[in-house]
Length: 392
Image (cartoon, rainbow, N blue to C red; front, side, top):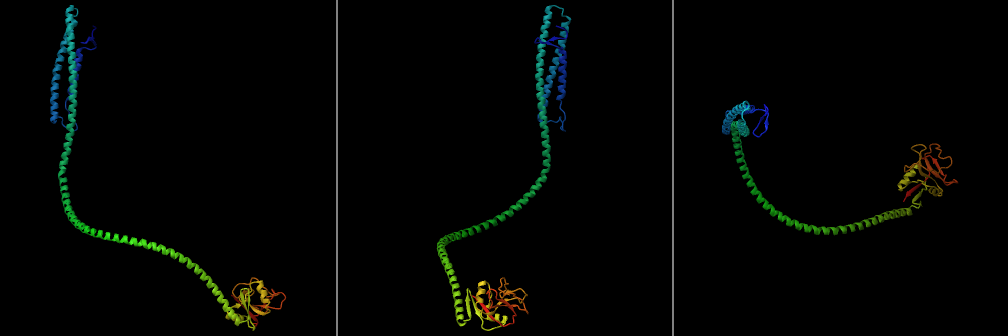
């Protein structure tokens, strides 16, 4: 076995002596003991744990005591192991029996050290678990302390809340009394409305029966109305047809009446002659143009207005020199008929009208060869015969 290399109880070589391992174990135990000491955090004094904290502290103290005992044993074994190792090195040249005894003792010590190391590791795990439990309990105690402080503040605010709730209760009591009165009034109103509803229901039933009766009557009257409407439409058509016939017959009657009156008048006045739809009066005396027109108006006619070549020929064949209803008295050269229409077609003699000496009125002049060239302008104050025209 080379110097500085050691064999453990399992037969494996170890690179460092047991004394060094024991020294490391002692340092680790010391550091764990320091980390296990309680500390103050967040303003909570660790020296004042609650009942759960006290139990945890007791358990931790017991564990520390056990660890100290184990450490003392380990240290003693380490010292003993060092002495044995030195003796083994110093007397390694001794007899093989002593070497074997020492080797056996060494192996036993190695096994014991391994067992103690295992126990130490187990205790270390338990200590860590206890530390975790201790930390958890410390957090819970802090949370409970915070809850306690919060509840203390809330308890201090309770009197104010109590006063507010008292005032609200008094207000609710007053509102309750008011609502009770209103409820009683509403109950009275409800009872009254119930009676009225019953009366209205009775009236409704009566009205429903009357409505049904009226509906039946209405349906009957609707049928009668439709029948009457049909009869009315038929009568209306017949009335319209009769009205049309009546209007036609009225017009025919009026025309016949007019013709009869004119014929009666014609029988008494043989100076009238008919051409197409007009009657013409031929005077046997002479008057000025104005006087001639006044005579025509008194007879319900007017001085003749010539509208066609055929009418001009008819009047020419009457073989008269007579006034016609044409003049330019208002504007010289602008000839107009007595109904206000302007002259469009004239049947003037050659060289006429010449307005010789203010000749503003027209006459038909028989004695010319061409029947459509017989008009002449003459002074309106000259006396001539005249021709009146009455349109039937």
